[in-house]
Image 1: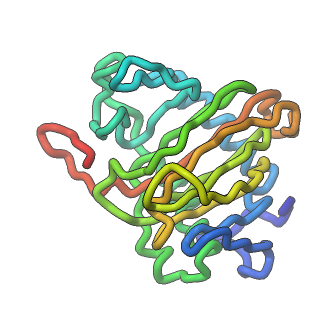
Image 2: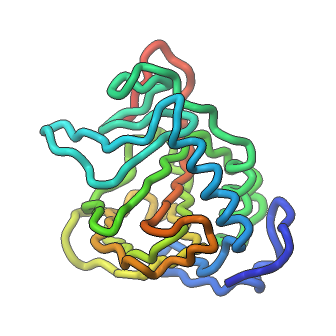
Length: 236
């Protein structure tokens, strides 16, 4: 795992990281977050989970409830829309999107794509913070409720998981499975921005308690919604 000192905005030289392109536009950087960054994010996630809109399991349109627990920053997500207020939870406005997450997102894009111009233009305005216990799963889906096709930045902390990346056409094979461990970065954009993906399995007991997370997996996904403060928040 990378243990370098606190990075600059765009991080250390790209060669400092092992870079794996698992599909066109989908890049995996193992151990990208330092142990200190992981601990800081775990502490921040606990504060965000307390509200103003608390962490919850999202109810799906057909009545089912997701096994993953979610808290949102910047914009509140529910299938299949974004809004500033959590009308499906307590009606309160979600917490603002932190500037430090935007900086982290730009550094992620720079290191994944080795393109600081693209990174400088990256302006995430929403985050979904997902907590998976040992039995939680996430089925095959596309992240297509945003109006922007800017890359999604995904950060993993805690227990490892199996991440499944498919095609942009359908939920079925072919797909590629990759293990995401604590500290790993995954960025998917370009040809893979609308790829179907899933988390079919959590690997309990594989995380390091030194992160501050003794069980389960935290996943932060940073997105550019392309939305403005209109009278009614909406996705696409």
